Image 1 (cartoon, rainbow, N blue to C red):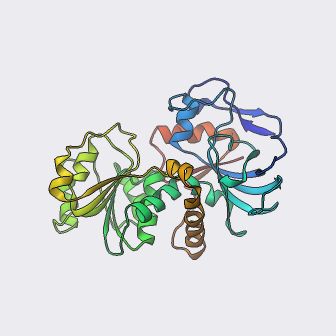
Image 2: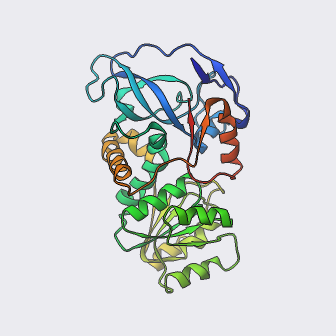
Length: 324
């Protein structure tokens, strides 16, 4: 079968296709999946570079968030059957035509949901929905400020916040990226690299401030965004692509606000029962038109390096998917 095999850590943009042996027949509690789409994420790129705190044993096939069709199941698997479409997660293994993985890592999908639509469900979409709904407790009519809003993580946060009835102020660094945010439902957009962007947010909210900050960016922007919270607001720490933030801890006290970490992966490992209701909601919202998970671009397996180049070069908007 065709797949991406990493034999040494290096530049994700340089990856290429290899001929690999077919994955093993599923054992007890396992499934073998015909992969229909794989989400392209920073986590996968960091694994390829060897920059993540966990280093897979070489060689390995990258790709963690995927969707596809169950080809076969092992003994004791009852919640999915051959022919079922599923969203799935693995530490790695997705960027190939087939993968064998634990059945517990698979969540059933409606048969009319395309795999490329659900390829990012298990990471960026699930992080946004779980973070905003279960951790941030977003209420209808509240205002959500999304940092880095044009990327995969930010775009999903815009769509999920809107589906939950919130208003969204999206922060993005270029006109094209801000237009992308408006297309995906943002009520207002600001250039958070410009001087005075906080004053613009204050004006949009009538000087009240925002109820939720969704922050996958980190760095110096985090403190500026924290200062925009209204009393009782919630600051959701999602990531730190711009570096670790240093927050003055008098601000939560003065603002009577809270800071929450959104660690979807850690939550799933600690309690897998959180997965089905999140994936079910995403599937229902997709089929009803409340969200649109269609990726901005779908790459062939041979062009997977281009997808990572666009991601790490921050030239991409929305979700990127590789179709093995």
